Length: 472
Image (cartoon, rainbow, N blue to C red; front, side, top):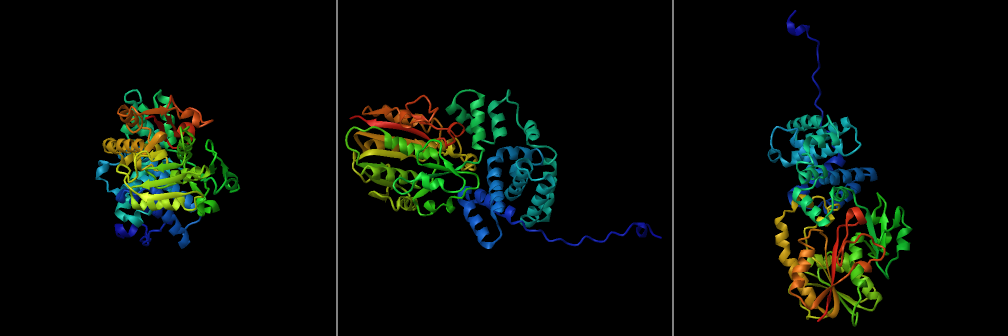
C-alpha cells in the first residue's frame, strides 16, 4: 500500500460563491464615495439607503446598521488607522484605499460595536471577497484576526503615545482627530485637559436630529405630537427627535413648514433678531444664505414684524436651495444669486445683516466627521481674506444704528475673534454688542461680548457669533 493510499480521503471543498451582504456593501460604497469623490457622508448615504429600501433589500434595522458602520468608521478613522498600521507589514499609504476601507469597516465592527468577534471577522472577509477578490480577502482576514486579539482600550494603550510625553498626539489618537485640530480646539477652548477631552469625545457622538418650527408656519406643539419628539434645550422653536427619528416622516418637514436645523444655528438667528436697534426695523439681509436654514428662520421672524428679508447666495444651485427653504414664507422675501463681497445693493440699505461665512467647519465635526481628515491648517489662510471681506461688506450694508451678525460654524480663533478684531480695528464707526443676554437661559456662553457654543456644553454645533452695531 502506498503512503498516499494510507492517508484518509478528504473530498475537495466545493466552490462557494461569495455571499452578498447588502448592508456592508452599501457601507463600503458610501466610504468609497467619500474617499474618491470627496463626497460628504450625510449627502451620499440618504440616497443609497432610499434606493436600497425601494429595492426591498433593507428594513429599518438594516438602515440603522449601515448608518452606524459608515459614520462610526469615519469618526474613528484616525484611531483605527493607528491600529491597522500596527497589524500590517507596510505603511498604510501602500495599502490600496478600497482594502483600507474594508479593513476599517471590520475594525469598527470589532472595536466600536457589539457585533460578536466571529461575525465581524467573517462578514468583513465575505465583503472583501465580493468587492476585492479572494486574494485580498485573505489579507483582510489575517489583519482582522490580529485586531481581534484585543479590545479598543487595549489597542489605545498600545498605539497612543503617553499623555505626559505628547498630550496633543495622545489625544489625537485616542479621540481620532488630526493633531493640528486638537491643538486648535484646545487653544479656542482654553482650560485644562478635562474640557478638551469632553469636546473631542462629543465630536465622536452621534448628533441628535433637531427640527425647527418656522414661526407662522408650524409650532413646536405640532412637532411634539410626533413619535420620539422632545422639546429643544434652548431655542423656543426647536424640537429634538430621539434616536431613530426620521425627519422625512414628519408632515411639517415634508411641507417645508419645519426643517432640520441644529439648535446652535437657530440661536444665531434668534440673537440677531433680538438685538436692539436704533430706528426702523424693516429690511433684513442674509448675505451668505445657502443652503437656507438660517434664512428660513430669519424670514419667518422678519415676517412676524412686518419686515422683508433679502437672501443672497453666491452659488446659483445653493440659491435654489434657499428659495426652496423660504417657499411659503408668510412675509415678503427675495432670493438672489450674488457675490457678497461685491453686492448689487446700495450701502446702508439694511437694518439687520447676517453673514454666516464660509469656514473650515470644525464646529460641525459630529455631523461631517470626514471633514476633520480633509481640512489642513493652510485652509485657514485660504478662508481668511473672504471672511474679512464679507464682514467688511456687511458693515457697509447696514445703516447707522443697525446691527450685523458675524457667524461661523468653527470655534477656531483664526476664524472667529481674529477676523472680528482685525476688521473692527479699521472701523471706528462700529461697536461690539454683548450678545449673551439675548439668549436667555443659555449658560456658559463665554467671556463675551461674543458667543461661542460647544457640543459638549450646549449639545449644539460649535457656532460662533459676534454682534456689531454701526454707530456712524
